[in-house]
Amino acid sequence: MAAYLSLFLAAFVAATLLPAQSEALLAYFLTDASLSVPLLLGVATFGNVLGSVVNWVCGRFLRGFQNRRWFPVSANRLARAEAQYHRYGRWSLLASWMPVIGDPLTVVAGLMREPLASFLFIVTLAKAGRYLAVAGLTLAWL
Image: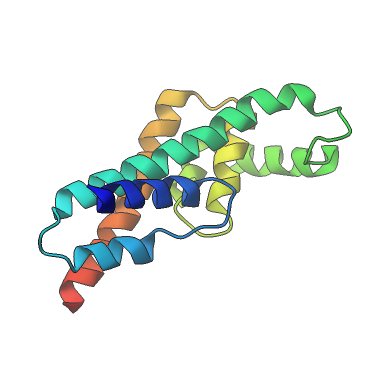
């Protein structure tokens, strides 16, 4: 149970703007035959998607504070993000699994008022695909 909880927490934190990494932990747990591979994949995906939802919520509700001094994004940068999002649209969320750009994309989706249902669908596909690839490579290597 501790393995699943630690994987969930690592995946959750890794999906937020905080620096963390969950793929190595998943690969490590995949080497333990007593743990369920489908459950590990489900827990990692759920934690990572939930962390992305936190980013989406932050983007969704922080937009109202864009004129405040403490707002973390300048008006110029916000305009550029909007332009990029509108150019590539919601399908840019398929890159939400990628390091560096993925987490900010989920915040931008909230800022751009992406509906939660489409956000969840696309982000879940991306995150589950990444963890399936990690599992496939790890298990093939073993």
